[in-house]
Length: 339
Length: 286
Image (cartoon, rainbow over the protein chains, first blue to last red):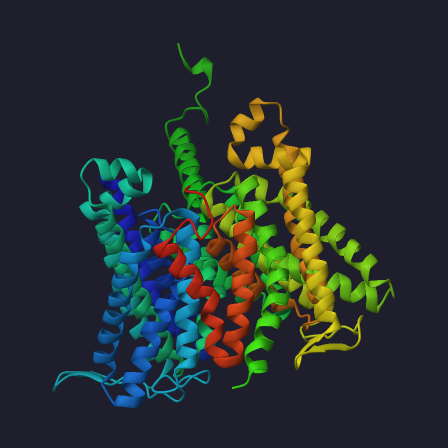
């Protein structure tokens, strides 16, 4: 087991180096922009996955991204507050809204919770669309300035005018978000989440305050969804209510379902694969939803744990096979090997 | 504010409401019999509307024949997708929802490719307007209301007065017990799904002469149906009827006096009912 961890450690470092060198590999600003949005989608999918760890499926996640995005945009554009303070305030606001809403909606279970969150996400979107000042109504907020420059006086400074710098900003924040959620899901708290997911009532009866943990997962997921919304807004430089529809919330759920919900890499893999696919489908854009629909339906109906499950099964098969070859044994344990 | 401005929305609302009952009945029948929340319900409504639009516009079929055709087409499509997709989700929540989302995208996109994205108006089947006490109602709206009422009564009789309907109730109450009593659960489920989708389709067909028809109309329709069944109580037929009328009237007044903000009504209904009275107005405790 320890050697496996060492190997995966090397793998993660290689992956990180690859992510660092992406701006050098993809010179085309359009491609870099696509990759930046892939990262944001991976963060949003992961935060959706984090909530799902307690067994509650949300279809209103775009609403929390909207709260984050709108609040940061309004604070920067209308009230002249710095981008970093706005980022923090926006994330906190998403968390606070989730805390209040979580307490009243998380008693609802299963399909009813899905319907409730669906309604919630749409209400948030419509409210922003109807709120003219400071949120700009249906037009939204346009022409946001790039995020403020970050500096350690006399030593180091970075400005965020270019696509490359925005990519790095996104990369750092997305990685922080995903790593934090990964750590939390592996902690004692994550274990409680799994218990609640597997047997809600049993967990309650063993003395766990399931409500508290469900709200906690919901709030943490919403905070990072808010961060995703802020990153989205800072990258685009504007925000409209039409970016946060039910279809968008459904997309995050789809990333998780296609990628696989049992592994931290599942939602990330789902976001990467589906976003890449959507770029390749650009010439036949009008058919894209049909292709997507076929992929996601077959992924949930025919794969046990989504793409990550498929990948892990393949990896195990290859490892088993190579182990057998190296030991000079046959490929499988057939009866004649036993003496 | 005159008497007419207060009464006109009520009349519109009642007409909308009875058609909403059809929609909600379809959704609630499928949910109680199959335990499937069909997120593509609105898309079946849209297909129904397009079927009637094409049957009367291109094939020059009589409107009532077109309505029958649209029930058959949509019910067959529904049964097909139940067989091919929903059944494989085996009642698990996430796969069922994902299948619903996929079906939504697929049918919506297919409609956009086949019919084009722009909204279409149907040639009026019934011309003229009835005025009473300065309140106006076009003949097509009156026809839509009447057809809906007849169909709702028909569904009520089907469920409470026929053997198939009794079997459906039995399956909805307890699947295993129904099976052990010799009810062919698969067949009843198929009939239920066909009935549910057919109702969505015929609602679309009934509303086609009144509203514009467009490929994206399914999403709002789904939300309305959801809010009605949650308001009335999931699985309750009288609840769906009450919920449909309430939503129709509330929405009609909202659009008259509040405008854009009224689009939040169905969502607020869903949220408030789920939070404060989960069984809805007439639902039984789960």
